[in-house]
Length: 439
Ligand code: GAP
Image (tube, rainbow, N blue to C red; front, side):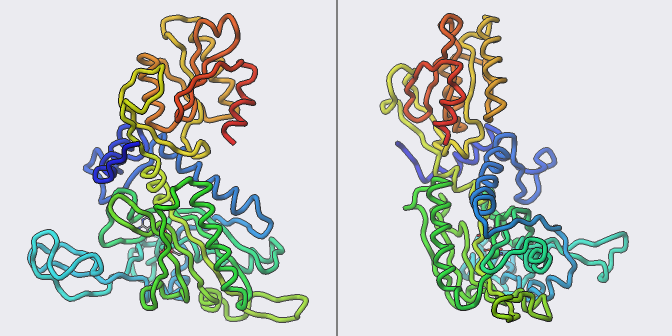
């Protein structure tokens, strides 16, 4: 398996564009500062990740419930949460070319022209807009910079309607907005991005145990569900003074992105900071003990876009001709070795020849039938070798070919993406066969 790390990023970006995973946003108008659109395959991949996350952390647990809150909240939320006061990065400006940078991303000189830099000023990252027609200060509102706050603000409503007792968690998936000084590295740092967050409410004395528990859950998600190589992940204990204003302990899960080791996810102990700031009176009553108090919070947070990027970088493989199995043209191939559960399509269906109506008809029948259970695609362009190559490049785990023997024997050839081995399978057994293989 060849993996040229130096060009991996360019190759992943090029594949994303070529095959419809991710495009530059507003491209025909010259784009818009690092905004990106997920294309037909990207949205499937991203939705698979979000659905697996929701299944694992909400549906398969009895101590979790979900939320889908508004993106724009009352500005008082951001005063109370400390974001209006504290959610900022230090910004420096080049005195010569006037380009701006995050102070922690540069040394003493401007990286663009070598000019001298100004001293650092704090720059608030909250995205502003106006509510209603009058554009004045009294109508200024903010897009949420994290999904977390609604889970605190709605805490009592959730508690009363779900009848949960501590410990329990609230999960949310959705967009967050930050006016990043220097967005970049493709979908790694954007101004509009998606988060999957859990606020896990506990009694104060349990926080260390619960923190360790969620750390292990995050590792399992990374390795078992996303299928990332554990050697590409590193825990970073975030030092005093570098943590977010609400956190008493934070661990970053860093991933070896092609542009360096950078934050993939975070795990924070937010104490009772948020609930105390939002509620004048303790919002939780322990019925047995007759005590009212402010629950503490452990927060595992997962960036959706960074998950997509890490999964693509980890799965991208170029196989030289010599390592390939027999039976197929021995050309070099690009393969996305995605876990089948994450791959945009699970199965591709091909008629051996497109000018033989009986083969096309049979292949279409199989395609439509499998569509009821799996994400399936159909391809009748070019020759079979090219179709395999095309599906390997987007990570489709299985390809079905309908040939003349199919018409006689009611069976098809199923080809495996990773081993490139082929098997004959009865059409009547395909659903069961794929269900087994894909789980
Ligand atoms: N509620 C806690 C919180 O928002 P964070 O570390 O600021 O913590 C959580 O963000 C996750 O969101 C990060 O670990 C990362 O995966 C993702 N994220 C943060 N800023 C991002 C950006 N500008 N572009 C893409 N993803 C981002």
